[in-house]
Length: 298
Image 1 (tube, helix red, strand yellow):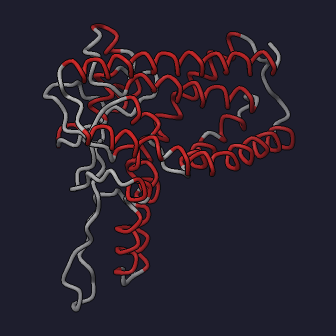
Image 2 (tube, helix red, strand yellow):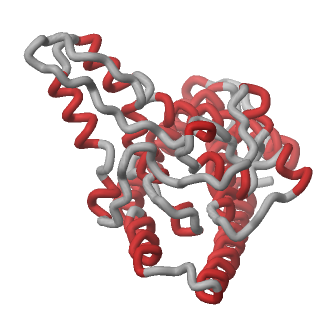
Image 3 (cartoon, helix red, strand yellow):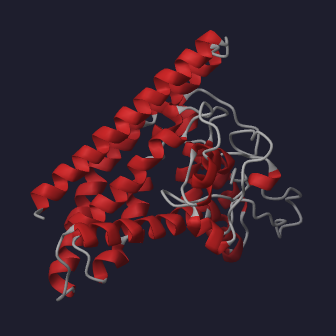
C-alpha cells in the first residue's frame, strides 16, 4: 500500500467518524427536543465546546507540520530499518498507537502542566457530541512527542500519523448520553458508557477509563471502572462556565497563582509536574493558605 492509499484510507476513516458523530448528534437533538431536555444553557455549552476548535486549529496547523517534519527527519536520519505499509502493519500501528494513547491520556490527567490542556476537554457539565471537539490548543504537541518512540522502532511516519488520527476519530461518537450499555463490547472497547465514566467527576469515577479504542488497557493497568450510578460530568472543582475564553484558559490562572505562591524549587516543580490534586502547605509562615489544585474528573 502506498502513502497515497494510506492517506485515502485515513480520509475515509475521518469521513465515517464525522458521519457517525453527526447521526448521533441529530439523535441527541431529537431526544432533547421531544423530552424537553434542551435548555439555553445546553446550546451555550455546545457553542463553548465548538469555539475551542478555533484556537486548536490555529495552533494545530503548525504543530502537525512540525511533528511530521520531525518524524520524517528522525526516520530518515536515525532509523536504518523500517516496515512496509500493508494490512498487517496498519493493524499493528493502530494497536501500538492505541496503547501509546492510553499512556498519553493518563499522563494528561496525572501531570498538572499537561492537565492545563486536557482539562478543556473535561470542563463541560454536559455529555454530547460537541464535547468531542473540545480541545486545549497544545494537545497535539503533547501527542506528537509521546508517539515519537513508534517512529524510532521503525514505523513509517505516515503510519504513525494514521494511527494517531484514527484513535482520535473513533472517539467522536462516544460523547453522548443517548446510547446505553452495549453488552459484551463493554469488556473490550471504549464505548459511550465507558467514556461517560471517564468524564465523571464523582469520586469513584476519577482517573478511570483512559482507553482510546480498546478498554483492555484500563483492565490491564487497573484503571477500569464500569458505569454504575449516572456520572456528574465536568471538573471536580466548581467550574461550569460557558464563556469560550474562560473555557480555553480554565486551568492557567490557578497554575500561575500556585507558581507565584511557591517559595522553593521543589514546590514550583510539584506545581508543574505533580498530579493536579497535589496539595502542599506553603513553607512561608506569612502565607497561611495551601495550594488549591483543580482535580481532574477521571
